[in-house]
Length: 221
Image 1 (cartoon, rainbow, N blue to C red):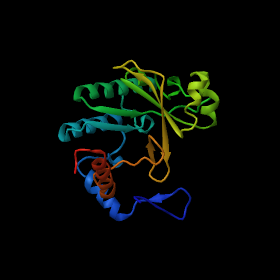
Image 2 (cartoon, rainbow, N blue to C red):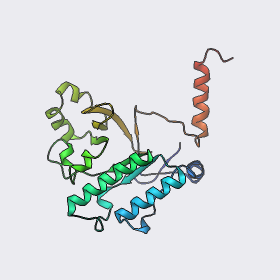
Image 3 (cartoon, rainbow, N blue to C red):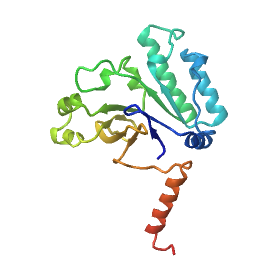
């Protein structure tokens, strides 16, 4: 087991020997910004640009809008948010990278929609893709049928979480729901209950995956 339970309910930890393997594998793949450098928006964006240029980064997560200090950005509150959203969108195109910009919603009064995102409409207008993460709780079950056919919405009640594709500029997809299962021990979102992904640092799962692959290949002796 890659994580171990503690004496506290739903609290798990990664053993040192597993953590060392993960650290070694992610050493030149995963970089985490040091918040001690400050959260001034222009500084963060310039640091991200420099990192992309130096390390040829292809995927960036900026989490989240409300954590950024926009005081040095020109304009009023929503004008500043628009500038940052458009700057990030431009940066993604300039460097041909995927940038996920996390924006939290206001306190919901119903089923979450794009208008519930706290901030200017440019946050979603500037983005090529907009995804909304839903928890399948009582509010989801109560309000989902206000926006989706009831039979369609009910098909997702058995999941723990649902990702909604609200906007996809390339394919024109919108209002598409994708059900997932949250695994408490690993804090991963899974496609199926008990799903196991074999990472290169996970020797046991890689060996098991290879055995299954060999068994499914009729040309292997």
